[in-house]
Amino acid sequence: MFAAVIPIVYITYGIRKGQWADRHVGQRQRRLLLIPVIMTSVGAGIGGMLWLDAPRPMLALVAAMLATLAVLLPVTAFWKISVHCAVSAGAVAMLAITYGALVWLAVLVVVAIAWSRVELRAHTLAQTMAGALAGAVVAGLVFATVSA
Image (cartoon, helix red, strand yellow):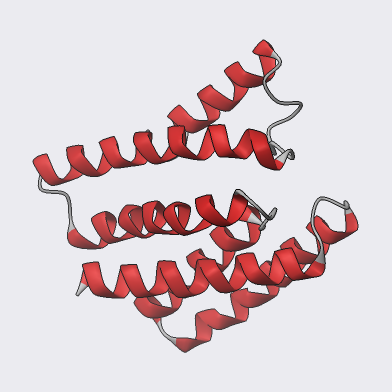
């Protein structure tokens, strides 16, 4: 609810209001408005999870998401780092921590996402690589720490 539904509803509202052109929110300056809203929603979700004593791995997953957004936000102020690549690489890192090294084959999904972002001219290769690296490192470290 807090990590997906509320952010999508807010993005859809922003599209209808004319704040951004599409659900990808391609303009870097517009992302500076959107990311803090998503972070607030995710933070509220974490608060609810703590209050309801959610399972530790679930809390770790959402905390990793919040930490990744916290790292991407200041970078977004001056550079259009790929959130798509950060999220997908972070997911692969958390899956690998949970299920083992074989999951790293899912890196091919991250590569496909990066290729598509470059092909669509939404990002440069450097922006996709930086996003993937940031997502994998931040989400992986936070997930491993919180879920331990």
